[in-house]
Length: 417
Ligand code: HEM
Image 1 (cartoon, helix red, strand yellow):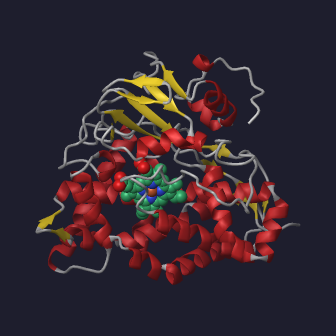
Image 2 (cartoon, rainbow, N blue to C red):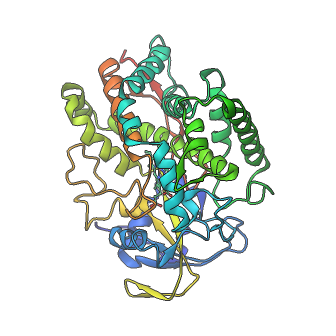
């Protein structure tokens, strides 16, 4: 990668939302080339950046950290935000923020409810949902916000149905999860509402009250949905307690929602910018599966996650001290020229495509990756078959977040006229 920019590495502020709502890649390339394990100083004036951290931008370093949880723990939070709360509290935190043995146990229980079979068998009904959502916009000749009308609707219906939230209430799930998305701190304390806007904290509380009602209804008469399965799942006689169920519900609702939505939108935009590649997909839908991998790499909608060093160690030529924060910039890894030829080129034929959009491997690798891949393939199969000439007719508006690198408004017109 030829770096033509004249940045000073110490002036690159990865906690600046403005960097992520424009094009972060010149700065990320510069960091990777000049200081791939970079000490990012805290900014006491910025509430989202009052903690220093190591910023990793090389693919190999991120894979190393992800696959060595004994050296790099998730149990002190995984966000880049303000709070350094120890999260290895088995009772209250979701699987994302705990280490083994808690993590393996909790992930085991959730995966027991969220099986590969469930994902495989969901193809026909995911297709129904995609067709239904596209039917709802098929009559529109005017431009509309594709994110709101299509990208957001498919994943929320899929995960809403899997969780057992009735269709009539799924708009609530969208409202609640949207309220938690425009923020930079995953290490929030939902009980106290700290590190979080009041709106987001209120939304989470409403979501949990709703879940409690769902659980009461299922206590005597279990159903086939995931809420019932989470209530009943058992490993060696142990079940998830109420708070663990609640955190599992929260992570499944949010993790599967914003991410798939943002990747869909990133793909729609990329294909509009690359009409030749889009034409190839229309003519040969078998290529869509591979194109989805490129959309995941290109969009990299989860920009980063954090770990905390459990002991003194080394990454590259830098000494990392016990307790240091280490942030893995997946967005940068996915454009690392030592792994991806011509990394700034969108290429539906790219193979191999060892992107880290779902994480760098290791125990926390995205649990929903098979479901996300399936949904994305189906959405693009249906979209390109029905609206092969769609056009993006205005600028994209980005999420106000350094974490979810996504688009919240993309004006699209379905027919070329
Ligand atoms: C394009 C869509 C998606 C992307 C880009 C994405 C990305 C990620 C990333 C980067 C991680 C952290 C990996 C790590 O720390 O090593 C993660 C974890 C997770 N994801 Fe996804 N995800 C997506 C869709 C989904 C879906 C559809 C679900 C489920 C409904 C889901 C559920 C989870 C869960 C439960 C975890 C935590 C796993 C653990 O800590 O063991 N994700 N995801």
